[in-house]
Each structure stands twice: as structure tokens, then as C-alpha cells.
Length: 56
Image (cartoon, rainbow, N blue to C red; front, top):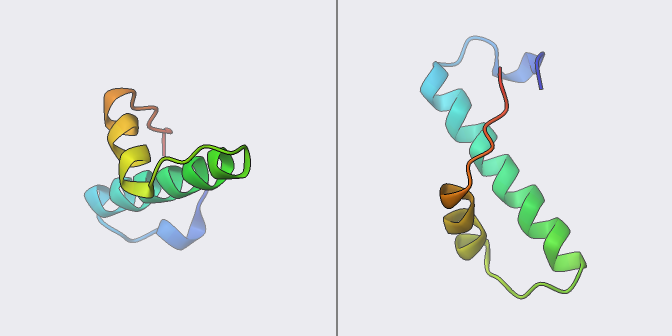
């Protein structure tokens, strides 16, 4: 995720928030396909316990 042109010009805190939301949505969708029944909110809470923030 080094060159996300869509995020250029945005404040760093907004970029981090958008990336976090995308990560949560991707993780939730991926695990739901595998049969996990956690909600998106529950997935986000688990992500807070184990943050894996990608570098910009």
C-alpha cells in the first residue's frame, strides 16, 4: 500500500482511518467467507488488540 494515489493530499490521520476501515472490511469479508460469524464491529475490536498498520 505504498502508493495509493487516491489518498494523496489527505491528512495523515484521515489516511490511517481509511486504511484501518479497509483492513477491517477486508478481514471481515475474508473470514465471513470462511464461515466466521463475527460482526464487522467485533472484527474491528479484535483488530484493535492486534494492530497491523501498513506503512504509507
